[in-house]
Length: 420
Image (cartoon, rainbow, N blue to C red; front, side, top):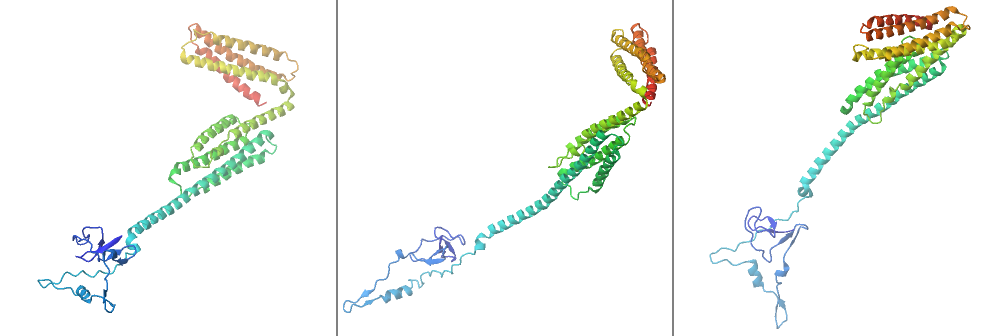
Protein backbone atom coordinates (compact mmCIF):
# COMPACT_ATOMS: atom_id res chain seq x y z
CA UNK A 1 0.00 0.00 0.00
CA UNK A 2 1.36 3.49 -0.97
CA UNK A 3 1.33 6.43 1.43
CA UNK A 4 1.80 10.22 1.15
CA UNK A 5 2.49 12.99 3.68
CA UNK A 6 -0.27 15.02 5.31
CA UNK A 7 0.69 18.71 4.66
CA UNK A 8 -0.79 19.69 8.04
CA UNK A 9 0.56 17.14 10.55
CA UNK A 10 3.32 15.56 8.47
CA UNK A 11 2.23 11.97 9.06
CA UNK A 12 2.06 9.28 6.44
CA UNK A 13 -1.44 8.65 5.17
CA UNK A 14 -3.06 6.51 2.47
CA UNK A 15 -2.70 8.11 -1.01
CA UNK A 16 -6.27 7.15 -1.80
CA UNK A 17 -7.75 8.96 1.23
CA UNK A 18 -9.45 12.36 1.14
CA UNK A 19 -8.90 13.26 4.81
CA UNK A 20 -6.03 12.74 7.26
CA UNK A 21 -7.02 10.11 9.84
CA UNK A 22 -4.73 11.78 12.39
CA UNK A 23 -5.57 15.52 12.22
CA UNK A 24 -8.71 15.45 10.09
CA UNK A 25 -7.40 17.91 7.48
CA UNK A 26 -8.63 17.61 3.90
CA UNK A 27 -5.85 16.30 1.70
CA UNK A 28 -4.98 18.31 -1.46
CA UNK A 29 -4.51 16.71 -4.83
CA UNK A 30 -1.20 14.97 -5.37
CA UNK A 31 1.62 17.09 -6.84
CA UNK A 32 3.64 15.48 -9.58
CA UNK A 33 6.80 15.70 -7.54
CA UNK A 34 5.22 14.74 -4.23
CA UNK A 35 7.09 11.83 -2.60
CA UNK A 36 5.25 8.56 -2.19
CA UNK A 37 6.18 5.74 0.19
CA UNK A 38 5.61 2.08 -0.65
CA UNK A 39 4.62 0.59 2.71
CA UNK A 40 5.58 -2.92 1.72
CA UNK A 41 9.15 -2.02 0.68
CA UNK A 42 9.70 1.22 2.59
CA UNK A 43 11.02 2.92 -0.62
CA UNK A 44 10.42 6.61 -1.33
CA UNK A 45 9.57 7.30 -5.00
CA UNK A 46 8.32 10.06 -7.31
CA UNK A 47 6.02 10.00 -10.28
CA UNK A 48 8.73 10.57 -12.86
CA UNK A 49 6.30 10.40 -15.73
CA UNK A 50 4.73 13.67 -14.58
CA UNK A 51 8.06 15.54 -14.08
CA UNK A 52 9.79 16.60 -17.36
CA UNK A 53 13.56 16.28 -17.32
CA UNK A 54 15.59 19.51 -17.54
CA UNK A 55 16.93 20.05 -21.12
CA UNK A 56 20.40 21.57 -21.58
CA UNK A 57 21.01 24.82 -23.60
CA UNK A 58 23.30 24.43 -26.66
CA UNK A 59 25.64 27.24 -27.76
CA UNK A 60 25.46 27.20 -31.59
CA UNK A 61 28.90 28.79 -32.01
CA UNK A 62 30.78 26.53 -29.66
CA UNK A 63 28.39 23.56 -29.50
CA UNK A 64 28.64 23.54 -25.71
CA UNK A 65 25.71 22.24 -23.61
CA UNK A 66 24.81 24.32 -20.56
CA UNK A 67 21.93 24.47 -18.08
CA UNK A 68 19.75 27.43 -17.20
CA UNK A 69 21.19 28.20 -13.78
CA UNK A 70 18.86 31.10 -13.33
CA UNK A 71 15.94 28.76 -13.60
CA UNK A 72 17.59 26.41 -11.16
CA UNK A 73 18.31 29.30 -8.84
CA UNK A 74 14.73 30.37 -9.11
CA UNK A 75 13.61 26.97 -8.07
CA UNK A 76 16.06 26.79 -5.19
CA UNK A 77 15.34 30.38 -4.09
CA UNK A 78 11.69 31.11 -4.80
CA UNK A 79 10.68 34.72 -5.09
CA UNK A 80 8.66 36.47 -2.46
CA UNK A 81 5.06 37.24 -3.04
CA UNK A 82 3.74 40.79 -3.32
CA UNK A 83 2.93 40.91 0.42
CA UNK A 84 6.49 39.85 1.30
CA UNK A 85 5.66 36.23 2.31
CA UNK A 86 7.44 33.23 1.03
CA UNK A 87 5.31 30.52 -0.54
CA UNK A 88 4.50 27.63 1.81
CA UNK A 89 7.30 25.19 2.21
CA UNK A 90 6.47 21.50 2.17
CA UNK A 91 7.47 19.92 5.48
CA UNK A 92 10.36 17.53 5.49
CA UNK A 93 8.92 14.06 5.67
CA UNK A 94 10.06 11.92 8.58
CA UNK A 95 11.95 8.79 7.69
CA UNK A 96 9.62 5.91 7.01
CA UNK A 97 9.72 3.21 9.66
CA UNK A 98 8.01 -0.02 8.94
CA UNK A 99 6.01 -1.36 11.87
CA UNK A 100 7.56 -4.34 13.63
CA UNK A 101 6.05 -7.78 13.15
CA UNK A 102 4.80 -7.83 16.74
CA UNK A 103 3.24 -4.36 16.35
CA UNK A 104 1.33 -5.51 13.29
CA UNK A 105 0.33 -8.94 14.61
CA UNK A 106 0.60 -8.51 18.40
CA UNK A 107 -3.08 -9.03 19.20
CA UNK A 108 -3.28 -12.15 17.09
CA UNK A 109 -0.12 -13.55 18.70
CA UNK A 110 -1.45 -12.88 22.21
CA UNK A 111 -4.74 -14.55 21.29
CA UNK A 112 -2.93 -17.59 19.94
CA UNK A 113 -0.79 -17.82 23.08
CA UNK A 114 -3.82 -17.59 25.37
CA UNK A 115 -5.67 -20.22 23.36
CA UNK A 116 -2.62 -22.47 23.43
CA UNK A 117 -2.31 -22.12 27.22
CA UNK A 118 -6.01 -22.94 27.67
CA UNK A 119 -5.70 -26.01 25.45
CA UNK A 120 -2.60 -27.22 27.29
CA UNK A 121 -4.23 -26.68 30.68
CA UNK A 122 -7.32 -28.56 29.54
CA UNK A 123 -5.22 -31.36 28.12
CA UNK A 124 -3.29 -31.68 31.39
CA UNK A 125 -6.52 -31.71 33.39
CA UNK A 126 -8.07 -34.31 31.11
CA UNK A 127 -4.90 -36.37 31.28
CA UNK A 128 -4.86 -36.56 35.06
CA UNK A 129 -8.64 -37.02 35.26
CA UNK A 130 -8.56 -39.61 32.51
CA UNK A 131 -5.59 -41.29 34.16
CA UNK A 132 -7.52 -41.70 37.44
CA UNK A 133 -10.57 -42.92 35.56
CA UNK A 134 -8.52 -45.34 33.47
CA UNK A 135 -6.74 -46.65 36.57
CA UNK A 136 -10.04 -47.28 38.34
CA UNK A 137 -11.46 -49.09 35.31
CA UNK A 138 -8.37 -51.30 35.00
CA UNK A 139 -8.46 -52.13 38.72
CA UNK A 140 -12.17 -52.98 38.52
CA UNK A 141 -11.59 -55.32 35.58
CA UNK A 142 -8.72 -57.04 37.40
CA UNK A 143 -10.87 -57.35 40.54
CA UNK A 144 -13.75 -58.95 38.64
CA UNK A 145 -11.33 -61.46 37.15
CA UNK A 146 -9.93 -62.33 40.59
CA UNK A 147 -13.37 -62.89 42.06
CA UNK A 148 -14.43 -64.96 39.05
CA UNK A 149 -11.36 -67.16 39.45
CA UNK A 150 -12.28 -67.85 43.07
CA UNK A 151 -15.84 -68.71 42.08
CA UNK A 152 -14.62 -71.10 39.39
CA UNK A 153 -12.51 -72.83 42.04
CA UNK A 154 -15.60 -73.24 44.24
CA UNK A 155 -17.65 -74.65 41.35
CA UNK A 156 -14.90 -77.15 40.48
CA UNK A 157 -14.71 -78.29 44.10
CA UNK A 158 -18.49 -78.76 44.25
CA UNK A 159 -18.36 -80.79 41.03
CA UNK A 160 -15.74 -83.13 42.48
CA UNK A 161 -17.78 -83.50 45.67
CA UNK A 162 -20.80 -84.58 43.62
CA UNK A 163 -18.69 -87.28 41.98
CA UNK A 164 -16.76 -88.55 45.00
CA UNK A 165 -19.27 -88.18 47.79
CA UNK A 166 -18.32 -87.97 51.45
CA UNK A 167 -15.14 -89.48 52.84
CA UNK A 168 -13.34 -89.94 49.52
CA UNK A 169 -11.10 -86.89 49.67
CA UNK A 170 -13.99 -84.61 50.50
CA UNK A 171 -11.98 -83.00 53.31
CA UNK A 172 -9.50 -81.48 50.87
CA UNK A 173 -12.34 -80.23 48.66
CA UNK A 174 -14.01 -78.59 51.65
CA UNK A 175 -10.63 -77.00 52.40
CA UNK A 176 -10.66 -75.59 48.86
CA UNK A 177 -14.03 -73.97 49.57
CA UNK A 178 -12.68 -72.46 52.79
CA UNK A 179 -9.58 -71.14 51.01
CA UNK A 180 -11.65 -69.40 48.33
CA UNK A 181 -13.83 -67.87 51.02
CA UNK A 182 -10.73 -66.60 52.84
CA UNK A 183 -9.28 -65.19 49.61
CA UNK A 184 -12.43 -63.21 48.85
CA UNK A 185 -12.42 -61.83 52.39
CA UNK A 186 -8.82 -60.62 51.95
CA UNK A 187 -9.67 -59.05 48.60
CA UNK A 188 -12.62 -57.23 50.17
CA UNK A 189 -10.51 -55.89 53.04
CA UNK A 190 -7.80 -54.64 50.68
CA UNK A 191 -10.28 -53.05 48.29
CA UNK A 192 -9.81 -49.33 48.86
CA UNK A 193 -9.54 -47.35 45.59
CA UNK A 194 -7.88 -43.95 46.09
CA UNK A 195 -9.93 -42.16 43.45
CA UNK A 196 -13.48 -43.18 42.48
CA UNK A 197 -14.82 -41.34 39.40
CA UNK A 198 -18.20 -39.75 40.03
CA UNK A 199 -19.95 -41.81 37.34
CA UNK A 200 -18.81 -45.04 39.05
CA UNK A 201 -19.86 -44.15 42.63
CA UNK A 202 -22.92 -46.43 42.58
CA UNK A 203 -20.95 -49.16 40.79
CA UNK A 204 -18.36 -49.07 43.56
CA UNK A 205 -21.04 -49.72 46.18
CA UNK A 206 -22.40 -52.59 44.08
CA UNK A 207 -18.90 -54.13 43.88
CA UNK A 208 -18.66 -54.18 47.67
CA UNK A 209 -22.12 -55.79 47.87
CA UNK A 210 -21.04 -58.45 45.36
CA UNK A 211 -18.08 -59.43 47.53
CA UNK A 212 -20.27 -59.66 50.64
CA UNK A 213 -22.72 -61.89 48.77
CA UNK A 214 -19.86 -64.02 47.48
CA UNK A 215 -18.61 -64.70 51.00
CA UNK A 216 -22.14 -65.51 52.22
CA UNK A 217 -22.61 -67.98 49.35
CA UNK A 218 -19.37 -69.75 50.21
CA UNK A 219 -20.40 -69.96 53.88
CA UNK A 220 -23.54 -71.84 52.81
CA UNK A 221 -21.57 -74.09 50.45
CA UNK A 222 -19.15 -75.00 53.25
CA UNK A 223 -21.99 -75.77 55.66
CA UNK A 224 -23.69 -78.03 53.10
CA UNK A 225 -20.45 -79.82 52.24
CA UNK A 226 -19.68 -80.51 55.90
CA UNK A 227 -23.18 -81.75 56.82
CA UNK A 228 -24.87 -83.22 53.73
CA UNK A 229 -27.28 -85.29 55.84
CA UNK A 230 -28.46 -82.41 57.99
CA UNK A 231 -32.25 -82.17 58.24
CA UNK A 232 -32.15 -78.57 56.97
CA UNK A 233 -29.80 -79.25 54.06
CA UNK A 234 -32.53 -78.77 51.45
CA UNK A 235 -33.42 -75.39 52.93
CA UNK A 236 -29.76 -74.40 52.78
CA UNK A 237 -29.57 -75.39 49.12
CA UNK A 238 -32.68 -73.36 48.31
CA UNK A 239 -31.33 -70.36 50.23
CA UNK A 240 -28.03 -70.58 48.38
CA UNK A 241 -29.77 -70.67 45.00
CA UNK A 242 -31.98 -67.69 45.89
CA UNK A 243 -29.03 -65.67 47.13
CA UNK A 244 -27.11 -66.42 43.95
CA UNK A 245 -30.01 -65.10 41.85
CA UNK A 246 -30.24 -61.90 43.90
CA UNK A 247 -26.48 -61.39 43.84
CA UNK A 248 -26.43 -61.67 40.06
CA UNK A 249 -29.08 -58.96 39.78
CA UNK A 250 -26.87 -56.60 41.76
CA UNK A 251 -23.79 -57.55 39.74
CA UNK A 252 -25.58 -56.79 36.47
CA UNK A 253 -26.07 -53.16 37.56
CA UNK A 254 -22.32 -52.56 37.41
CA UNK A 255 -21.57 -50.68 34.18
CA UNK A 256 -17.77 -50.44 34.30
CA UNK A 257 -16.42 -51.25 30.80
CA UNK A 258 -14.82 -54.69 30.63
CA UNK A 259 -15.70 -55.67 34.21
CA UNK A 260 -18.03 -58.68 34.59
CA UNK A 261 -18.93 -59.28 38.24
CA UNK A 262 -21.89 -61.54 37.44
CA UNK A 263 -19.64 -64.57 37.00
CA UNK A 264 -18.26 -64.01 40.51
CA UNK A 265 -21.63 -64.81 42.12
CA UNK A 266 -23.13 -67.16 39.53
CA UNK A 267 -23.36 -70.24 41.74
CA UNK A 268 -26.26 -71.98 40.00
CA UNK A 269 -23.91 -74.72 38.83
CA UNK A 270 -22.32 -75.03 42.27
CA UNK A 271 -25.77 -75.46 43.87
CA UNK A 272 -26.63 -78.17 41.33
CA UNK A 273 -23.40 -80.03 42.10
CA UNK A 274 -24.00 -79.75 45.84
CA UNK A 275 -27.52 -81.17 45.40
CA UNK A 276 -26.00 -84.17 43.62
CA UNK A 277 -23.41 -84.43 46.38
CA UNK A 278 -26.13 -84.52 49.05
CA UNK A 279 -28.11 -87.14 47.10
CA UNK A 280 -25.01 -89.29 46.63
CA UNK A 281 -24.13 -89.15 50.31
CA UNK A 282 -27.67 -90.21 51.26
CA UNK A 283 -27.68 -93.00 48.71
CA UNK A 284 -24.29 -94.26 49.88
CA UNK A 285 -25.53 -94.36 53.46
CA UNK A 286 -28.72 -96.18 52.48
CA UNK A 287 -26.74 -98.80 50.59
CA UNK A 288 -24.43 -99.20 53.54
CA UNK A 289 -27.36 -99.71 55.89
CA UNK A 290 -28.99 -102.09 53.45
CA UNK A 291 -25.93 -104.29 53.49
CA UNK A 292 -25.99 -104.27 57.26
CA UNK A 293 -29.76 -104.96 57.32
CA UNK A 294 -30.92 -107.19 54.41
CA UNK A 295 -34.56 -106.99 55.49
CA UNK A 296 -34.64 -103.23 55.00
CA UNK A 297 -33.29 -103.69 51.50
CA UNK A 298 -36.17 -106.06 50.74
CA UNK A 299 -38.59 -103.57 52.23
CA UNK A 300 -37.21 -100.73 50.09
CA UNK A 301 -39.85 -101.24 47.37
CA UNK A 302 -42.62 -100.97 49.97
CA UNK A 303 -40.94 -97.89 51.42
CA UNK A 304 -40.91 -96.31 47.96
CA UNK A 305 -44.66 -96.93 47.66
CA UNK A 306 -45.11 -95.32 51.07
CA UNK A 307 -43.34 -92.16 49.86
CA UNK A 308 -45.44 -91.99 46.69
CA UNK A 309 -48.66 -92.34 48.69
CA UNK A 310 -47.48 -89.57 51.00
CA UNK A 311 -46.94 -87.21 48.06
CA UNK A 312 -50.44 -87.92 46.74
CA UNK A 313 -52.03 -87.31 50.16
CA UNK A 314 -50.17 -84.01 50.55
CA UNK A 315 -51.42 -82.93 47.13
CA UNK A 316 -55.01 -83.81 48.06
CA UNK A 317 -54.71 -81.83 51.31
CA UNK A 318 -53.41 -78.75 49.48
CA UNK A 319 -56.24 -78.92 46.95
CA UNK A 320 -58.84 -79.12 49.72
CA UNK A 321 -57.38 -76.10 51.52
CA UNK A 322 -57.30 -74.08 48.29
CA UNK A 323 -60.93 -75.01 47.59
CA UNK A 324 -61.99 -73.66 50.99
CA UNK A 325 -60.49 -70.26 50.14
CA UNK A 326 -63.30 -69.73 47.62
CA UNK A 327 -66.06 -71.93 49.10
CA UNK A 328 -67.58 -72.22 52.55
CA UNK A 329 -68.41 -75.93 52.25
CA UNK A 330 -68.15 -78.98 49.95
CA UNK A 331 -71.81 -79.33 48.94
CA UNK A 332 -71.01 -78.72 45.29
CA UNK A 333 -67.98 -81.03 45.07
CA UNK A 334 -67.57 -84.82 44.97
CA UNK A 335 -64.00 -84.79 43.64
CA UNK A 336 -62.24 -84.94 47.01
CA UNK A 337 -64.31 -87.88 48.28
CA UNK A 338 -63.42 -89.91 45.20
CA UNK A 339 -59.70 -89.12 45.36
CA UNK A 340 -59.49 -89.94 49.07
CA UNK A 341 -61.34 -93.22 48.59
CA UNK A 342 -59.13 -94.28 45.64
CA UNK A 343 -55.93 -93.68 47.60
CA UNK A 344 -57.34 -95.50 50.62
CA UNK A 345 -58.02 -98.63 48.55
CA UNK A 346 -54.54 -98.54 46.95
CA UNK A 347 -52.88 -98.41 50.37
CA UNK A 348 -55.05 -101.29 51.59
CA UNK A 349 -53.85 -103.43 48.68
CA UNK A 350 -50.20 -102.62 49.44
CA UNK A 351 -50.67 -103.48 53.13
CA UNK A 352 -52.08 -106.83 52.15
CA UNK A 353 -49.07 -107.59 49.94
CA UNK A 354 -46.70 -106.61 52.74
CA UNK A 355 -48.49 -108.82 55.24
CA UNK A 356 -48.31 -111.85 52.95
CA UNK A 357 -44.65 -111.35 51.89
CA UNK A 358 -42.83 -114.32 53.41
CA UNK A 359 -39.36 -113.16 52.29
CA UNK A 360 -39.22 -110.68 55.13
CA UNK A 361 -37.85 -112.35 58.22
CA UNK A 362 -37.65 -109.26 60.41
CA UNK A 363 -41.24 -108.94 61.50
CA UNK A 364 -40.46 -105.85 63.61
CA UNK A 365 -39.53 -103.82 60.54
CA UNK A 366 -42.56 -105.19 58.71
CA UNK A 367 -44.79 -103.94 61.52
CA UNK A 368 -43.14 -100.51 61.49
CA UNK A 369 -43.77 -100.13 57.79
CA UNK A 370 -47.33 -101.38 58.15
CA UNK A 371 -47.91 -98.78 60.88
CA UNK A 372 -46.88 -96.09 58.41
CA UNK A 373 -49.41 -97.31 55.86
CA UNK A 374 -52.07 -97.40 58.59
CA UNK A 375 -51.30 -93.76 59.54
CA UNK A 376 -51.69 -92.77 55.90
CA UNK A 377 -55.09 -94.43 55.72
CA UNK A 378 -56.16 -92.60 58.89
CA UNK A 379 -55.15 -89.31 57.27
CA UNK A 380 -57.32 -90.12 54.27
CA UNK A 381 -60.21 -91.20 56.49
CA UNK A 382 -60.10 -87.85 58.31
CA UNK A 383 -60.16 -85.92 55.02
CA UNK A 384 -62.97 -88.09 53.68
CA UNK A 385 -65.08 -87.71 56.83
CA UNK A 386 -64.60 -83.93 56.91
CA UNK A 387 -65.70 -83.48 53.30
CA UNK A 388 -68.65 -85.87 53.70
CA UNK A 389 -69.85 -84.09 56.85
CA UNK A 390 -69.76 -80.76 55.03
CA UNK A 391 -71.79 -82.19 52.17
CA UNK A 392 -74.43 -83.20 54.73
CA UNK A 393 -74.54 -79.69 56.13
CA UNK A 394 -72.39 -80.58 59.14
CA UNK A 395 -69.07 -79.13 60.34
CA UNK A 396 -66.03 -80.46 58.45
CA UNK A 397 -63.52 -79.54 61.14
CA UNK A 398 -63.79 -82.66 63.37
CA UNK A 399 -62.89 -84.93 60.48
CA UNK A 400 -59.99 -82.70 59.42
CA UNK A 401 -58.71 -82.62 63.01
CA UNK A 402 -58.58 -86.42 63.09
CA UNK A 403 -56.71 -86.31 59.80
CA UNK A 404 -54.19 -83.84 61.26
CA UNK A 405 -53.60 -86.07 64.27
CA UNK A 406 -52.89 -88.97 61.91
CA UNK A 407 -50.47 -86.74 59.98
CA UNK A 408 -48.52 -85.95 63.14
CA UNK A 409 -48.33 -89.67 63.98
CA UNK A 410 -47.13 -90.49 60.47
CA UNK A 411 -44.36 -87.86 60.59
CA UNK A 412 -43.03 -89.29 63.84
CA UNK A 413 -43.10 -92.90 62.60
CA UNK A 414 -41.51 -91.92 59.29
CA UNK A 415 -38.65 -90.13 61.05
CA UNK A 416 -37.97 -93.29 63.07
CA UNK A 417 -38.07 -95.39 59.92
CA UNK A 418 -35.55 -93.18 58.12
CA UNK A 419 -33.17 -93.43 61.05
CA UNK A 420 -33.07 -97.25 60.89
